[in-house]
View 1 (tube, rainbow, N blue to C red):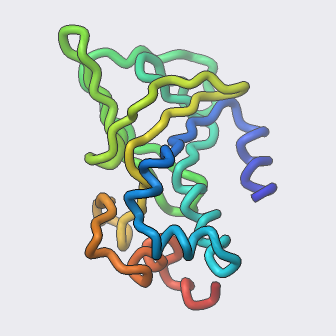
View 2 (view 1 turned 135 degrees about the horizontal axis):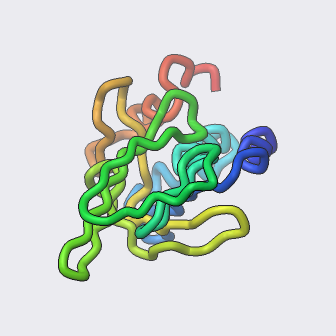
Length: 165
């Protein structure tokens, strides 16, 4: 994961959508057992890469886009498609504010439960669900459900070469 950290270091800012412990519990014991085993470490790495947006910092009230020191306000309803460290995969982010209430949602289903944790060069947003990429490009990401088995979970992380891992 050192190469990915170097990408983050050489860009200005980053956004990390950190799943809470409760979010990981939603995956169930079978998938968690796999992810945190010797055989699942490469998948865990890919899963965490999908939670990191390098070079773009998105707070609930401000956005610092790629390679820019300019700040953009996030008022009203805004939509962002942010590229992640998992090659070819992006996150769909919607932020809405109305009458003092804020809605900050990732991929249409995962709420940000702890907002705007300030980090050295970016922000940490704690999400209520582990973010899982879509099955194929153009598909929408979906929330993990108990009907998703381990093989489908693996396919979503490393499409096309999951068997090599």
